[in-house]
Amino acid sequence: MNYSLAPILNAAGIAIYVALGLTALYGVFCVILLVRQIAQKRFLTQNAANEFLDQVHEDIEKKDYEAVVNLCDSPPYWSKAVPQLILVAMANMERPAKKLRQLLAEKFERDILADLEYRMSWISTIVKSAPMLGLLGTVIGMINAFDKIGNMQESGGDPSQLAGEISFALFTTAAGLAVAIPLVMAGALIHVRIGKLQDSVQEHTGDFLDILEASRKS
Image (cartoon, rainbow, N blue to C red; front, side, top):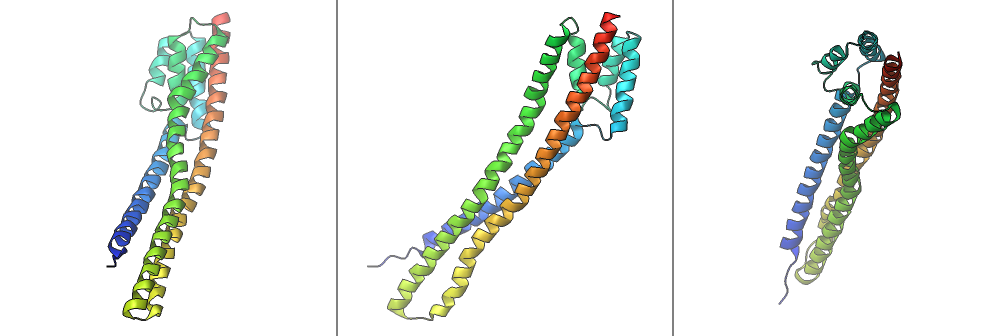
């Protein structure tokens, strides 16, 4: 008695297509979320950053530290990385300059960079998984096609009808690559933005700490 694997293979093929679709959607979601998070943490322009730092510099020269805290905690700035780090610095002003720099660097890496890298790890996982899912779908499709060839030899039929089955099976590999390739490009773009965010935060917090140290010495 012969048993056909077609129902199981067809169900597995559908499951793989659903998995590819969900993988693509989650990858797009992670990319959009990361782009928005990075945009929230950065100043829109260098002029905006300079305007903020000039105001902070002016308040620190007056030793009006409460004004600095209020400025950093105001709606235009409370979601950005540099004002958040300045708030941490103002709450730990008693620390030496070297310890304060180390504290801000650790705070930035732990609270901001770590979250961005966590999201990036999911994009990397999707980039690796999507082609493998596509290849698995192709293998299952080819097994299904050869199973039908075996049945045709017993019951008869036109083997040319299998061309559609084989092309449909190969389509899963193309679908997996279609998911992975745009995410590779998006991941590279996000890495560049994260690098720019890190550079700008280091530059601006360094300027702030220099200003603060000069104010404390005076």
